Length: 91
Image (cartoon, rainbow, N blue to C red; front, side, top):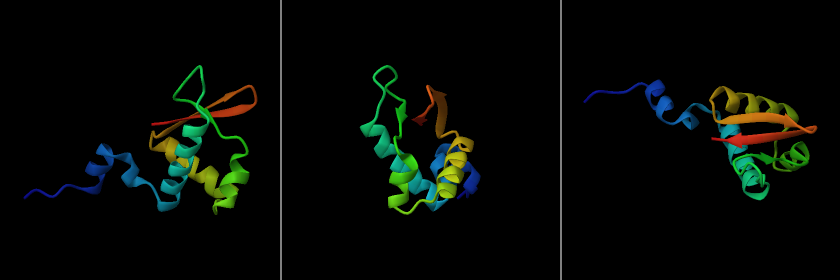
């Protein structure tokens, strides 16, 4: 039987390469996505009071910023700035 490397599975499912804190952030952002979808762009959503709401469930601003960077690096999140708001798209 041929054993595959972790990198092989990470290419199939990039969630496998994320830290546990970033996986929690991904799930939290998915909740924002369900509640705040854009009418014009259904895949995009805003996160009003993001830091405050996520802070209530144990995320510091540094956790959020590093998690978002990790998600972007894994090609699981896109971010756009529009009208002084950040818009997110989870993949």
